[in-house]
Length: 166
Image (tube, rainbow, N blue to C red; front, top):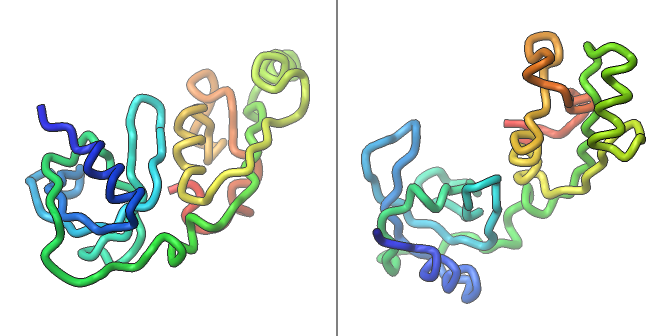
Protein backbone atom coordinates (compact mmCIF):
# COMPACT_ATOMS: atom_id res chain seq x y z
CA UNK A 1 0.00 0.00 0.00
CA UNK A 2 0.98 3.60 -0.63
CA UNK A 3 2.78 5.27 2.28
CA UNK A 4 2.50 9.08 2.24
CA UNK A 5 4.49 9.68 5.44
CA UNK A 6 7.82 10.51 3.77
CA UNK A 7 6.24 13.00 1.35
CA UNK A 8 4.33 14.65 4.20
CA UNK A 9 7.47 14.70 6.38
CA UNK A 10 9.37 16.47 3.59
CA UNK A 11 6.57 19.04 3.27
CA UNK A 12 6.67 19.67 7.05
CA UNK A 13 10.46 19.99 7.06
CA UNK A 14 10.51 22.32 4.03
CA UNK A 15 7.39 24.32 4.97
CA UNK A 16 5.67 23.42 1.70
CA UNK A 17 2.05 22.78 0.86
CA UNK A 18 0.85 19.55 -0.75
CA UNK A 19 -2.25 18.15 -2.39
CA UNK A 20 -3.69 15.02 -0.85
CA UNK A 21 -6.45 12.57 -1.55
CA UNK A 22 -8.27 12.11 1.75
CA UNK A 23 -11.24 10.31 3.27
CA UNK A 24 -12.95 11.07 6.59
CA UNK A 25 -15.96 9.85 8.51
CA UNK A 26 -17.89 12.93 7.40
CA UNK A 27 -16.75 12.48 3.76
CA UNK A 28 -15.86 8.78 3.30
CA UNK A 29 -15.44 9.13 -0.47
CA UNK A 30 -11.96 10.11 -1.70
CA UNK A 31 -11.67 13.86 -2.18
CA UNK A 32 -8.80 16.22 -2.84
CA UNK A 33 -7.45 18.73 -0.33
CA UNK A 34 -4.58 21.19 -0.47
CA UNK A 35 -2.85 21.42 2.89
CA UNK A 36 0.23 22.99 4.42
CA UNK A 37 1.39 20.56 7.13
CA UNK A 38 3.58 21.68 10.02
CA UNK A 39 3.54 19.02 12.77
CA UNK A 40 2.85 15.37 13.50
CA UNK A 41 0.67 14.09 16.35
CA UNK A 42 0.70 10.53 17.61
CA UNK A 43 -2.69 9.55 19.03
CA UNK A 44 -2.41 6.01 20.30
CA UNK A 45 -1.78 3.74 17.31
CA UNK A 46 -2.69 6.46 14.79
CA UNK A 47 -0.66 9.34 13.42
CA UNK A 48 -2.14 12.69 12.41
CA UNK A 49 -0.62 15.64 10.62
CA UNK A 50 -1.52 19.18 11.74
CA UNK A 51 -2.02 21.38 8.69
CA UNK A 52 -3.79 24.37 7.25
CA UNK A 53 -6.54 23.15 4.93
CA UNK A 54 -7.38 25.29 1.92
CA UNK A 55 -10.88 23.77 1.64
CA UNK A 56 -11.82 24.30 5.32
CA UNK A 57 -9.92 27.60 5.57
CA UNK A 58 -8.55 26.64 8.97
CA UNK A 59 -5.94 24.50 10.72
CA UNK A 60 -7.02 20.87 11.16
CA UNK A 61 -5.69 17.42 12.03
CA UNK A 62 -5.57 14.81 9.27
CA UNK A 63 -5.33 11.07 9.99
CA UNK A 64 -2.35 9.87 7.91
CA UNK A 65 -3.97 6.45 7.44
CA UNK A 66 -6.77 8.17 5.52
CA UNK A 67 -4.45 9.88 3.02
CA UNK A 68 -4.24 7.86 -0.20
CA UNK A 69 -2.08 10.13 -2.37
CA UNK A 70 0.29 13.09 -1.96
CA UNK A 71 1.16 15.43 -4.86
CA UNK A 72 2.70 18.82 -5.35
CA UNK A 73 0.15 21.66 -5.21
CA UNK A 74 -1.29 23.45 -8.20
CA UNK A 75 -2.38 26.72 -6.60
CA UNK A 76 -1.97 29.43 -3.95
CA UNK A 77 0.35 29.60 -0.95
CA UNK A 78 -1.39 28.64 2.30
CA UNK A 79 -0.79 30.05 5.80
CA UNK A 80 2.33 28.94 7.65
CA UNK A 81 2.66 27.19 11.02
CA UNK A 82 3.17 30.50 12.84
CA UNK A 83 -0.44 31.39 11.99
CA UNK A 84 -1.88 28.31 13.75
CA UNK A 85 -2.97 30.02 16.97
CA UNK A 86 -4.42 26.84 18.48
CA UNK A 87 -1.11 24.99 17.96
CA UNK A 88 0.73 27.85 19.65
CA UNK A 89 -1.61 27.75 22.66
CA UNK A 90 -0.41 25.65 25.61
CA UNK A 91 -3.02 24.57 28.12
CA UNK A 92 -2.89 22.79 31.45
CA UNK A 93 -4.98 19.63 31.40
CA UNK A 94 -5.65 17.87 34.69
CA UNK A 95 -6.95 14.32 34.91
CA UNK A 96 -8.42 13.17 38.22
CA UNK A 97 -10.07 10.04 39.60
CA UNK A 98 -13.71 9.92 38.51
CA UNK A 99 -15.76 11.71 41.21
CA UNK A 100 -18.42 8.96 41.25
CA UNK A 101 -15.93 6.42 42.62
CA UNK A 102 -15.96 5.76 46.37
CA UNK A 103 -13.05 6.89 48.57
CA UNK A 104 -11.21 3.55 48.40
CA UNK A 105 -11.58 3.39 44.61
CA UNK A 106 -10.38 7.00 44.26
CA UNK A 107 -7.27 6.17 46.29
CA UNK A 108 -6.65 3.08 44.16
CA UNK A 109 -6.86 5.15 40.95
CA UNK A 110 -4.60 7.84 42.43
CA UNK A 111 -2.03 5.21 43.41
CA UNK A 112 -2.17 3.53 40.00
CA UNK A 113 -2.16 6.59 37.72
CA UNK A 114 -0.95 9.52 39.78
CA UNK A 115 1.70 8.15 42.16
CA UNK A 116 -0.70 8.89 45.01
CA UNK A 117 -1.23 12.55 44.12
CA UNK A 118 -4.57 14.19 43.40
CA UNK A 119 -4.17 14.65 39.62
CA UNK A 120 -2.09 14.00 36.54
CA UNK A 121 -1.14 17.38 35.13
CA UNK A 122 -0.15 17.87 31.50
CA UNK A 123 1.03 20.97 29.66
CA UNK A 124 -0.09 20.33 26.08
CA UNK A 125 -0.79 22.13 22.85
CA UNK A 126 -4.50 22.86 22.52
CA UNK A 127 -5.12 20.56 19.51
CA UNK A 128 -3.30 17.66 21.23
CA UNK A 129 -5.43 17.74 24.40
CA UNK A 130 -8.35 15.82 22.88
CA UNK A 131 -6.02 12.96 21.94
CA UNK A 132 -4.66 12.83 25.49
CA UNK A 133 -8.20 12.61 26.89
CA UNK A 134 -8.96 9.80 24.42
CA UNK A 135 -5.74 7.94 25.26
CA UNK A 136 -6.56 7.92 28.98
CA UNK A 137 -10.27 7.32 28.30
CA UNK A 138 -11.12 10.17 30.66
CA UNK A 139 -14.70 11.30 31.18
CA UNK A 140 -15.58 14.81 30.08
CA UNK A 141 -19.18 14.67 31.32
CA UNK A 142 -19.06 12.79 34.64
CA UNK A 143 -22.85 12.61 34.80
CA UNK A 144 -23.13 10.53 31.63
CA UNK A 145 -19.67 8.93 31.35
CA UNK A 146 -19.66 6.73 34.43
CA UNK A 147 -17.48 4.09 36.11
CA UNK A 148 -16.49 1.37 35.50
CA UNK A 149 -16.03 2.40 31.83
CA UNK A 150 -14.49 5.70 32.94
CA UNK A 151 -12.25 5.73 36.02
CA UNK A 152 -10.52 9.01 35.16
CA UNK A 153 -12.10 12.39 34.46
CA UNK A 154 -11.06 15.75 33.08
CA UNK A 155 -10.88 18.21 35.97
CA UNK A 156 -13.13 21.26 35.38
CA UNK A 157 -13.69 20.72 31.64
CA UNK A 158 -15.84 23.85 31.38
CA UNK A 159 -12.78 25.95 32.32
CA UNK A 160 -10.78 24.70 29.32
CA UNK A 161 -10.65 26.80 26.16
CA UNK A 162 -12.81 26.01 23.14
CA UNK A 163 -11.37 23.18 21.07
CA UNK A 164 -9.61 21.47 23.96
CA UNK A 165 -11.97 18.51 24.18
CA UNK A 166 -13.61 18.22 20.75
